[in-house]
Length: 116
Image (cartoon, rainbow, N blue to C red; front, top):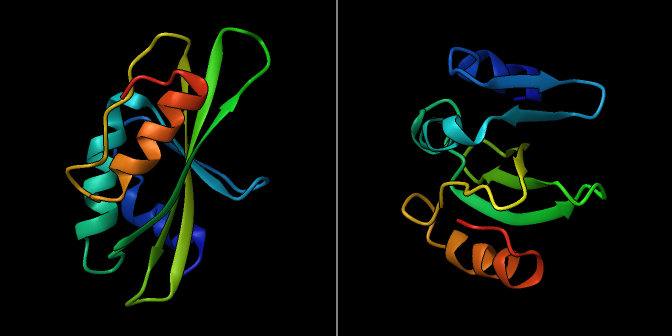
């Protein structure tokens, strides 16, 4: 399934948008957990592997971009999800959905100060 197909399944979630030019899905921090649950548990998606979480300093001393890369072993598809957050703003942890998130989130906190 391509990114457009993934978006068709999740587009009803508030705060979710598709950026076809850069090939990613954006989500508001408030909707991240709802989106993550859908990505992992929807039978047509089944993103069972959280490959990476990356924090990007946007260079304005005011905000970060958090990038999540997911893969489905069953369906052999992947997607990238990005969330923008202000400095000192907290973003929900995904460690209850993907245990591997714990390690990546600790790294983002240690390196960039992102609060999960």
